[in-house]
Image (tube, rainbow, N blue to C red):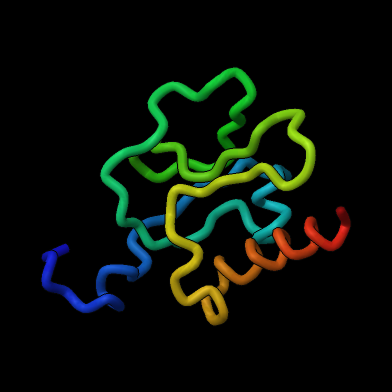
Length: 105
């Protein structure tokens, strides 16, 4: 994407993420595959001992992870769910899950 594109163009959905069936993220999104925006130029090469990869881009880049055995809501994504979160069908469930985790604590 050219650097002079509009903000909307920069945050367009760019690729799918395949999620582990019945995993944490598949449960949040009620799907085994989602479409996300992508602006990154780096990512996880070798996950740490407790890092569980549950989502991968078509190029195999880890996109959705959680920390095994962590207390509370310890998940992370490689895309930018904060962009248009109120209206984005992928972002909204992620933030709703975060809010539910906060209320439960």
